[in-house]
Length: 299
Ligand code: NAD
Ligand code: MG
Image (cartoon, rainbow, N blue to C red; front, top):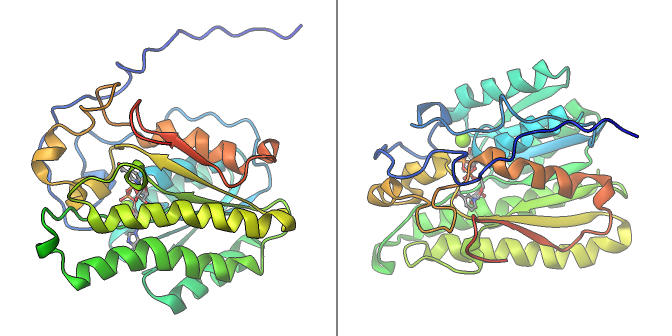
């Protein structure tokens, strides 16, 4: 009989900071290191169990937020990890690479703007070359700017959201396909916004619905090749995306309050979902969207 280790029962209500939060505007894309309170990406807590031993992962937006939590967890589960981010985020990215290397895994930083098609192809080529292959692709980077009225939403703003959230995953996935063998996985980060859009996230919500359709369509296309495609739909999560214009600052003060748990999620609370979807044990999960929204929202 195996030995049972007892851990204290933990109340999710008290586990992390609750609103009110301080207003804390940052320029897009924002830095996790400048947030107050500091987000928890699992730096001190995530424990691996070899679930992704030997895997090679590329995570976009892996410098901060949800992507960083996935990067830390993947490394602790035994994967080598390449991360993409914008050059302005180098200091956040450096911290992630150090955390990956502290696990004895390989970590590769590949900065660049994924709204550029040729960079997206280069990103995949560089990741494949550095990692020596690719079997987990996480299309997680995202752009979100709240705009109160449709009349104030510019074509440039609309374009930035669509390019980052819809075109980039298309370009990156298309380039990656040549390298993905049976058993590989693709994971998208969608949002509750796909299912219950806010009035001030008109463009963003549409892209997150597109991410759901990306998962559902591509899972059917790639199922016969043995490649699984799934997505995660987070609710409010404490990340730079939100404080750098994703929400108006008065909404940051009460961020997460409306959920049944009464607080925003922390990136660390989503890491195990990204691990689960990449884990070969989840071999019958494809075309699925896993929610993590603190008790409200869909799916
Ligand atoms: P985040 O700011 O930590 O991560 C987003 C990342 O996207 C940035 O770190 C940046 O590196 C990357 N990015 C943005 N534009 C880019 C570009 N042009 N080129 C390259 N990289 C670019 O915030 P996050 O909340 O962890 O966001 C991760 C994903 O989660 C996004 O797809 C977002 O839409 C989604 N999401 C977030 C929430 C939330 O409440 N935080 C809720 C639902 C969904
Ligand atoms: Mg970032």
